[in-house]
Image (cartoon, rainbow over all chains, first blue to last red; front, side):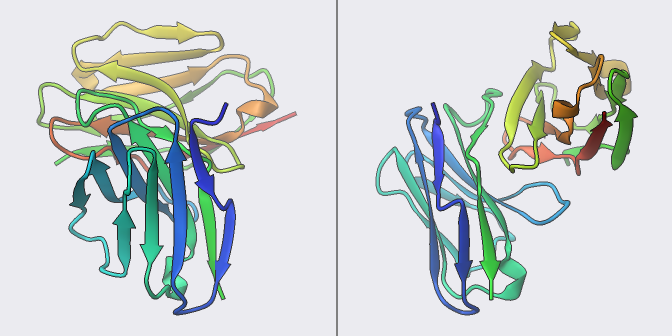
Length: 114
Length: 113
């Protein structure tokens, strides 16, 4: 049974047109993360929520925003996608921050920009 | 600063061969955790193992085994009798005290039938 679910699996948007990616979890984990992964690169952390506490990485562009309306759901909003934002976006959860808790990843959403 | 180095960018082996994926890490934390993740072509990252810095015992799980050596700051991963389904990108990652998970650049393993 899928525990971290990302929708859609593939997303195509136009240059500059806002897009939202969604993530839901059935694990009841406190922490949810969003990563960006470009081709042949390691995942790069954009931000994470610890419960309702939002933590942005210093080098995450302002173009990227996130919302977590409740424990189960988290959204990634890209306000004005550029060609350089084409990537795989991975959502992950963990039961706690630190303490070595493994992160559990969804299948990812592959975003293409036309 | 936390750093993970996976020196092998790509490895190709023939099915049934054993293969070892190398991982070297850097950290100043005394308590830290090491992970291996598998990313098959479909894209999801699959958690394989976690090791904490106080547990240097090697671990075996089926055809997979992990060798953790603090003296050399290494956490290597061996697949015995490789299979085509093992073809994937494998990431080693490090979690320190109060820092995000740091990934290595990954090793792409191709197992040829």
